[in-house]
Image 1 (cartoon, rainbow, N blue to C red):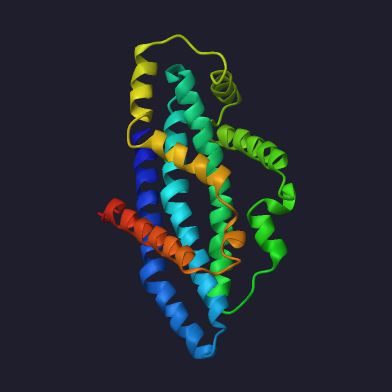
Image 2: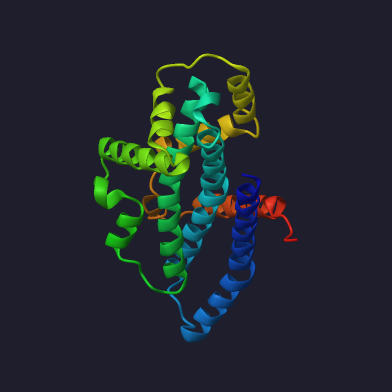
Length: 243
């Protein structure tokens, strides 16, 4: 168990360092090559590509990573330490992390394509963001996310019985024990509740990134850049040196 946690910790650190290299080494080098190959870019397409890339990084660092961490705490903590609130937080954390992972991937691919002067096909963008499968319908999106979340929960627990107990705990509160109280205290720390509220607000209240940036405006660019700066700051403070 300890070796598994150490392996996950080193993997997490490796991912963070890889993102640092992507942001501060590979991306500037790639942009330099792009301007050398095509020195006269279409300014609006490049600007929109940069802004979508900023949104993609922001979603991944500020939403996907902490929500996935929350889901991992809950689903790998075992059904014996579940309470109803903890079960719901884990389930919502997994659902929202999977949703924003898809939209962040779409933003990153479309953003890199725009910065390099290549337009990513609409079909590819819609497939990455699940819109192709839901056709923009909220009911279809929720049904698809629920199905994907159940599959993700099964992968997290690696057990059909544990997954069923986690899902059952959403509606049938298990007996309160010391383990459940400790798990509730653990889950409710580190701003997990605030992150879920922010993610739900983004899911319900914000338009799709492509629609948001369709009409250029300075305030939109400011939001994207501030999101990117905040995400990079979070990456920098959470990255641990490799030993």
